[in-house]
Image 1 (cartoon, rainbow, N blue to C red):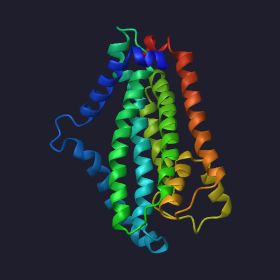
Image 2 (cartoon, rainbow, N blue to C red):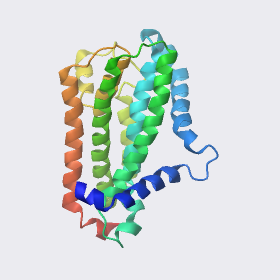
Image 3 (cartoon, rainbow, N blue to C red):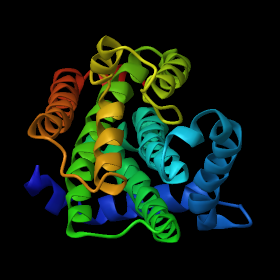
Length: 255
């Protein structure tokens, strides 16, 4: 894969540049929407849910922002990744290039948006008076896991989208379900121990929990949480790679 990357390095850079700029093409505010959009969602959710759950959580704005930050990156990366093959069919049906380059470029574009929002997140952390510590460096671990996880899921979704065009609608419903079971805006105090354990079957909840434990609790997450983060990332990426390898030639007949 590294050898192919060197060969198509120029193409990959151009794809990343195109994907990032095309997202904000003909908009007045341009890249500023990378920050405005998640902040607007955060404000709306804060106004709606702060009275219901805010009294039970210290620094509820940061609690909410951490969940929204991870979820927004997940939805942006997977939605863009899902359409990577169909949107670039005009290129790879005429030129023999690795098809996964199109999805990887989409994920880099989403990662840039995530990084910009992360800067704003840390500004909010500072405003809330939460002390920064060396433990914040550990956030690189779940971030790396999310990159692998979102890329793997993008590989899976983009392959399915080629064969089943209904995937875009099904995935829209699925992301709504995932949002409600990721504890983005509510706490787990009123839920049974069984329900709390079941939530760890949701990778998004695991990554959100990792962020909150570092930032809000100032605690190093348990080895089990580290293991789950890595397991979900590697599993999604492995399945995605297998699907691409298995159906690589068939994509040409269905796009």
